[in-house]
Amino acid sequence: MRPLLIAAATLSILTSFGFSSAALAQDRYCLQGRIWGYPGNCQFASYAQCMATASGTNAYCGINPRYAYARRYRGYR
Image (cartoon, rainbow, N blue to C red):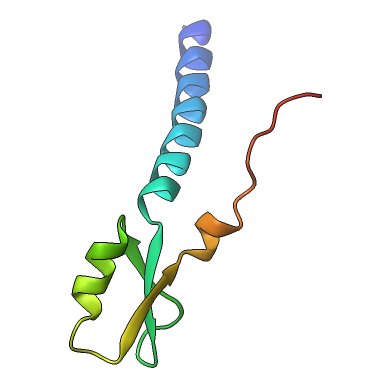
């Protein structure tokens, strides 16, 4: 029973890392402006989606700071 519990815990930890990086890749653009503040509404996967939402308002689209300043895995040297 104990090895099964350890295996389940390990699997859940490994999948949580995978989901966090996938969510980061989807939210690349943020709707920013006076109403939204900084970083703003960061739920847009494409610039076109963000600009369509911003049209007709006093807002603009910028890159998500969590995406822009994310550390990239470079491997061992």
